[in-house]
Image 1 (cartoon, helix red, strand yellow):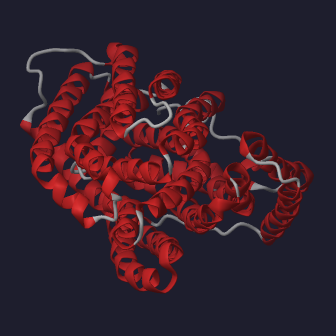
Image 2 (cartoon, helix red, strand yellow):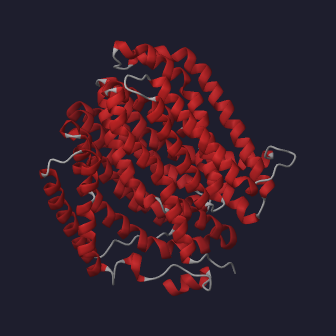
Image 3 (cartoon, one colour):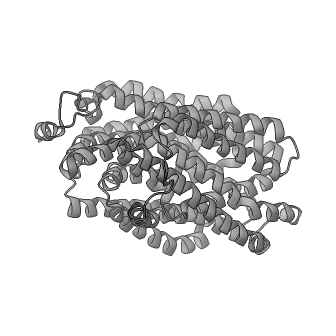
Length: 510
């Protein structure tokens, strides 16, 4: 019977994956005031819209990039470096062809897209150039994602953190040096290209020993069909991301000035950064469940879920109570009173995100690990359709806040459906946190709000103010955590160690 990794090893993977996820977020947050100053809000909004286009393109690659980590983990479990190399080379070739086809289309359609959006006349030529060449930037982004997936699938989270941190640092230095006051977007485009290329090269160098270049260099048709079948179902799930973020940005750009896309982007960026904290554990958990499934089948993967889910949901919801209470104040203190709308946007989005991550996080890892992404696709379809139906009416009533409210509300609805779906098809249990946990979370939220009001009263802004807004949540945790330590699920029981096999773990948990 396969032995599970030591808890310390798993926790170190979570920590390194957190660093890998955090590095680009920290750089992005740190550069936002600088870019607003040097580019102006209109040009910054145009760049934010361009990043939405890149994210859209990378999300609509047939689900390949999102599926690679799972298949690399399977190859790693078999120690099959040749097939891992073929999968990597084949995916890079696919991304190149995909991007070149889109580039051919964007060269012709970019002027039409610019005409459809509310872009100032002084920025139209710059916007046309930018939209024509965004698919090439997307190719580099997909290549970087592929290298990240290779590192994740092989459990190389320390190397992933190194590659991501180095590429993010390279981007920051390039922006500071080349994007001066009055700069245009081609300079920023070049900095972003340098970041993605740096990530791709660093990832390849660090993961080179995990692959082997052997003839034939491309995967077999059987592998292509297997990956395509899995990826096509993943693509349906990824459509949720397009509708919930990218389509929201396009809709705002279509009905309002491009500066509102910048305000929306700031709120989205803040909410996404806060949401990412519990997701630091996602990739290590997916790798762990995939490896468990590879060695022990669905019974072993289900046993892992039984052990991890009672820790996951209360931890995410407790963290969410603190982060939601603080984030609106943080954005306003960080950038100033002119960005209150961005802070409200962040609060609304993060509320939906936290419920979504809490209810679906472990279930998503499970269904991906056992090769049933179709379940994820089903709830994602519910989110996509309901959000599309609700967005336009709420946009007409409440503008940008209506758009993000539709995303948050329908995300909560779809997440609840996913819980029911997994319970019916996979018999995955659903356990709510205890009443005591809810009371303590609410108390922590109240303490955080009171502390943030004190920070707001100091009239301190910028980076120092942003740091100060992080103090109230930490104080609330320090005060209340001892009262919950003896019963909060994440502290109740260590994860299985090397001397506990998965069947024993499941029997003990029962």
